[in-house]
Image 1 (cartoon, rainbow, N blue to C red):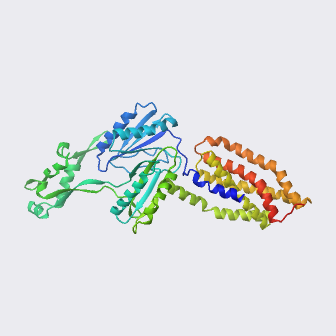
Image 2 (image 1 turned 60 degrees about the vertical axis):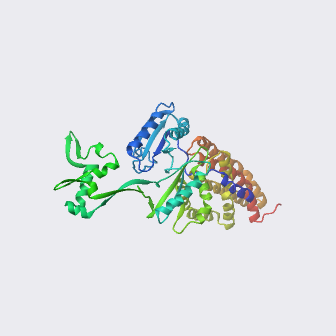
Image 3 (image 1 turned 180 degrees about the vertical axis):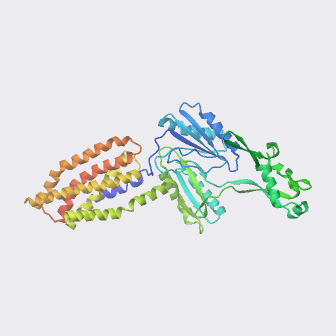
Length: 483
């Protein structure tokens, strides 16, 4: 029994790991990420181009496009994205689940062939807590330059994994920026102030609201600014005029323009710059497994990190570990209460020891069942294992109680142990069988599949082992010999 139990634990690496099951909804969220600094007009053109290529697809029911932002949270588990000009999201509603699965590789190929400057990823709406990408690793450091250096190394390792289909950073690229250096001496000569220059540029480029026009129940701003032809290119900035008391002077007479790059955004975690390296995966694998593989592949790099730089697991694998911690937190108190209740009923520490020996036997069936039915070991399966513990303990208590009844009836210890397993075999097996049969319809449910497999298979193996192992342990503990 010990060998079987240890062998079942060794099967854990062969079982797929995931947080929550895959989605059963027909929607497909297609994200389009253009290079940093791209205009919202370019993003709109990319989204429109992909929409036109998909709208006549026989697997598509409808398409909704959102440029500069993500779709509204029409489902609680949606993960909103921070608005930015170089981002668009298409909500592609497929006709059914199979159509959605066919659309994913098609969209990937269309984007690669027709939108080469766009980083795209398609994902379904999860059943559990959302994660932007299935594979996510965080690189944190004291300086944004060193964070970028090690994030690039992490991305290189991640891209080498054959199951990873795409990689990207949540921020990395820099934006082009025009820097204006004011000449204070010339400002004084012209009788201008820095505030006047800033106000003039704000009005000419971004616009200044001078009044409002009321149309029925709407107030429409009347904005003063230059015509688009006079502010459409960066080279025309120097020709902008600044009004003075003596007339207007060009901007180039009071300031100097220079062009450089700067970070459009910096994500921070605990006040430190943090880049999340994200990756998509193909069919037949889970994000938790691939994240763990990539993290293990980074072992050498993680051992040689400079002071202050860390590489951490993020996304669904991190959420899964946190949730398991929350789940196991009350377990010691639960076990203590169970032991107290068992002691009040059994009034014998040896019998308590026998029951605790049989409690973990369900793990054997759980691991075998998850492998046989190709079900992942996730949050739902973990709930099933906890529920299974109580059922196994109940069967053990029933067997020990039957042994006590035989002893009180005057039978010998050896006969009592043998007869208890025979007498209780039918009711225990019938109770287990009705539970298993009730769980079989849930095997086809994507959400409940792991839990149903864990309880049904664990209960099958635990019931058989308990009927054999518990009498043996009882005879060994109480030193009962054959007559």
